[in-house]
Length: 444
Image (cartoon, rainbow, N blue to C red):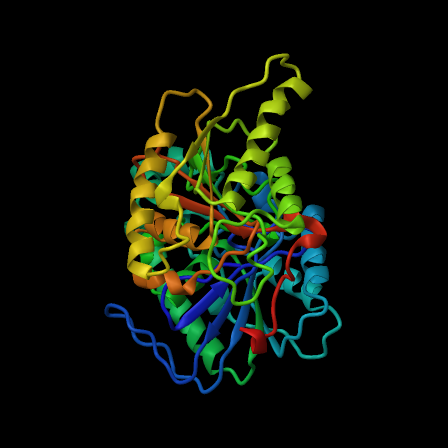
């Protein structure tokens, strides 16, 4: 689950036991009564009287996704067999969830995904053209290498500076943000309290960003996968044509004995039985990665989680083709420890130091890139996500991470470049020990 940015909104992604949840899978937006967003020159969102929950889903794989074509708002592609399966997986995940209404893009690939997920629910799906994918004009229909060959400088700008990308006299990302705000007006003023929204990669990014007060410069910072089902939550991928081989993986320490005791004071406690299972499953999830360094806080729960990851990493080569175990560097950072520092400002300042150290750890010569794992309390990782987004400490109260979850940060341009959030609060690897995909609005 992720909650981000403005205290007026809670955005969360969760996972079912059956499959992964990167940051574009499902978002739940909860808004308090009669509050409007503040932010720049953007018009405030309309006031509402009761809290709302909005789950965002991206459509399943389409034929043009498979071919690597630039789709934009064209309507020629349809779901592949894989896309149909992905939609069905989402249907099962949300089968017992209660929704009052469903909004969907009118484009075939999204509308079909909505129909599969919505299933036998009696309410009709509401299609809205503002939920269509980003308008890319002359780019649409081209293979990516064709776009690069035909448009040259413009295509490079689309990759490197999408917020200012101009084509055919239009600024697609700016137009998209305008549409997203229009969508939120319709969603927030709708009589329903719990809504499902099925749309597309870019428009869902814009919906999340505008909801939490992020501008067009954050396009491609919150990645989305088809129906939220990538081959791996941390598989090196691309963002706007930029490949990434450098990653920081934030691992929330497993459940501890303190977590099981209500109102117990913070202290140095070890993992409970659930935490031991969670740490082992996390270690197995990271098995195929070549982890350079595992950094942990000074708490027993974090150290034990880090040790589980290190042991599996070092054993991986022996179990595989190599006969000599690989050495994983283990480090402990005092600034990752917040047992006695519950003050927001202190946590933020300490996490800022940690962020710089993690970026230093990520640096170094490597043909295959570097992977650094940081293990700590969820509160520390929430702050680290804020530093990655380059926001202020006031945003921390809108995030939430679960024990045993992982979050993946990519650096397509290296540690000196901007971080991209590939996935937040991934818990599918925990299997039956993971939390439900969504929660009732009454429990938030």
